Image 1 (cartoon, rainbow, N blue to C red):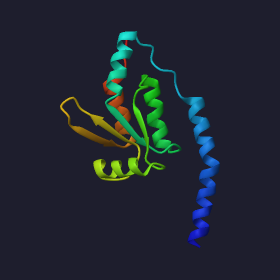
Image 2: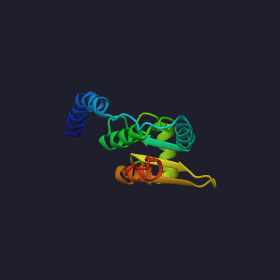
Image 3: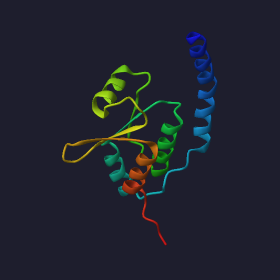
Image 4: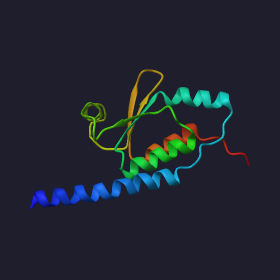
Amino acid sequence: MKIAIRYFFRGVRAVLTPVILGYEKLTTPKPIDRAPTEQAELDKAGKQLVLYQFQACPFCMKVRKEMARLGLTTVEMRDARNDSAHRAALEAGGGKVKVPCLLIHHEDGQQEWMYESDAINAWLADRFDAPSTN
């Protein structure tokens, strides 16, 4: 019975993965328009971030879309599902294999492992969102 259930969910995943990825491609927002110097600073800051994710995870997609909106193109994406080294690093550093997880390398050398898509998106928006012009 367990084998039948396993194959059922593999089939569901095989059907839904292209749908989820297509939806992401169609609905990803355009990045915020920034001055070249601001974008250069953003690119430098983005190199201090690593996103551990699964390709078809809806919560990971939510974080990737926020990164796209903010123009964070230099964030390293690590596949924790298909790469055993990244999976092991996530478990060793963050304490659990759960995605999305944002690894933040702070200027003082400290590392912060942030889980939960809403918390990650709030941190990204607070740190990188363009100031509103009212």
